[in-house]
Length: 378
Ligand SMILES: *[C@@H]1O[C@H](CO)[C@@H](O)[C@H](O)[C@H]1NC(C)=O
Ligand SMILES: *[C@@H]1O[C@H](CO)[C@@H](O)[C@H](O)[C@H]1NC(C)=O
Ligand SMILES: *[C@@H]1O[C@H](CO)[C@@H](O)[C@H](O)[C@H]1NC(C)=O
Image (cartoon, rainbow, N blue to C red):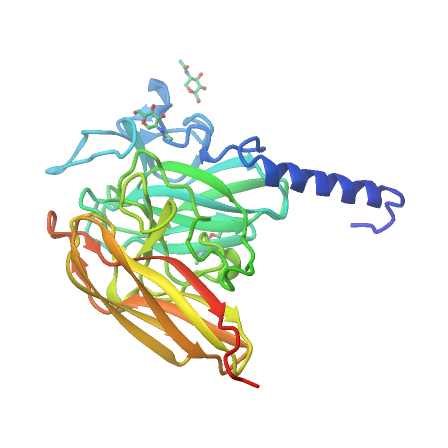
């Protein structure tokens, strides 16, 4: 890339500013709209000559997608052994067999952050994984634990666009003996992320989780934010999920949420923690306030959320009747470092009382970190 483009620089800066202004002011009038990718729910299928049973023949046989390996086109209600395959959206989905992948290219804005959301279901007992990539980023998402009763879960994964287009590739790296094993995939959607900044009302970024991945309107099980997510590529801007298991991102259309439209459900006990590192001034006093509640998803029982701010902790008990509600809690602490790590997890595991196969847990929301004025440091 030569550096000799001369006078263009100023104009480029101005047009970049204009682009950013347009982006900031009209989120919806955007190069790609938030929502499903083209044929992202696979309702458009291969024609009869490109199908051998359920196997898709030909790299371009599924409209808008490029496939590789053993990909099957699955109709809702189809049987596999004695298992009835259901599809979360519409009537069709795809299955990625051993080493199979699907790919689509779409336009993005270079430098912007995006989050992908897709639904996946395991069909065999084995641990399964999917490798999601948008070059040069990739991430392997484990699908060993089911969080919803019908077998489908939605997952989020974020990337920063390196180019003006993104090639999203979903690959099943598995090698199973049974070719009919391999996850089903449906409803692949995207949302541009606008990483929020700390304000004078909150030192934490995105404290209410209002900014986050696309939630498929036709699904009622939220979106899993997979483990080992670094904060620079988090689908929940500002936050990290460093634990072994996912946290669940939920919305007020389908769940009870303490504040705003979005919140986080801690679905896997101490294995499912969410954290953010905030800038603090050593010796200064701070308050960490937050709401603890339940999502109104039949997740009843005695819950306990543990909050951490640096070395200080607070245990917040909450009794859930599974019908929604919340309480507020405050952790007061004096910072000992220029960086204070704020973290939450649930002490216990919980299961939904209406379906004993789905993990659930307490909801946290509206997390605010503020310094206390006149804290007697003088
Ligand atoms: C079916 O799809 C294949 C490949 O996508 C194409 O070559 C062929 O013309 C199609 N056939 C019909 C009858 O549409
Ligand atoms: C995931 O896929 C990408 C793109 O094909 C590849 O570069 C990366 O090595 C894969 N990761 C793993 C762990 O297989
Ligand atoms: C949700 O379902 C409705 C009715 O089936 C459908 O019209 C709509 O396109 C779906 N929404 C999305 C985002 O797929």
